[in-house]
Length: 388
Image (cartoon, rainbow, N blue to C red):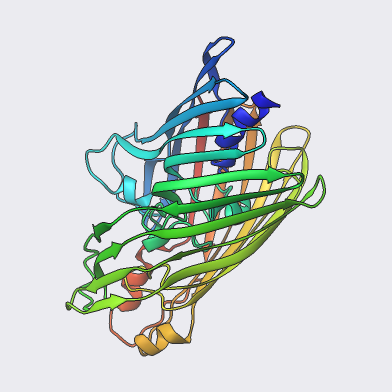
């Protein structure tokens, strides 16, 4: 039981498509593992065909059995870009891929302590409790679902408000039978500059200031096939626009999710989640979404010959308060993608994925719709993911 719990913190904090780790060292007390993958793809979107990095990464995990059924552990993970720089912003990794000259970027880094009965506590940069609610649809390789409220501030990593790979997070996890929970606090006082997107909009955010945020994620394994999730996240951001206006609001998101089957098992898998939020995310030119509704869904089937077919539909739509704040403007990020994966020996995956965009960024301001649509487009990609 102790060894199973020692592994729990790593799996619980990494609900993205996982890659197997290799034991580099193991004895009666310590385990040291290396994991990650290299993902290379050719993508055609936004009028450009290019070789780009597919969120390649490397991680190191350490586990140590202590006295009285306690276990300590740590994990470090970096995103790597072994193929050079890309100017195409199309996925949840877009912030990294548009930075010139960076080979590494920090994805995760935390230390933890766990016990059979008392649960686990971790400190550092880690997947937020909110991700427990919506991870079940985040399995596309190329076009991650950007409607779940995870990759906030226009497809960043969710670090600012602690819903994605949150910075400076203290998180407690425990399980009771078929029920498990994650509770977190993000303890920080941070000021973040938002990169100029060239829109020249006086209402776009140029700076945000965040203090603490709080989140909870609940999971119920109703049956061997059915998993139900629920949770929320709360914070109080301040923002400064390009015109100097200071905005002080409450950022919250709450939602539910459900999945049937197991993504990595043969057969059918289907999942969906829905959320409501206020001042939690921004549009594509950096303006707050005063309120929005998001839905993500995915379905797949893994055949006995290791060929998987998948399809996904996602929508994030701003509400009436957004349109009142920006008369004549509409923000509706809406797209579907489908693909085929071939899983070869559980270590190499060849894939083809294509996206069709149905977004609506209508605006009465000349040129604004085009600027909103710069990072949303149809596309097709073919690639290979090599597990380390």
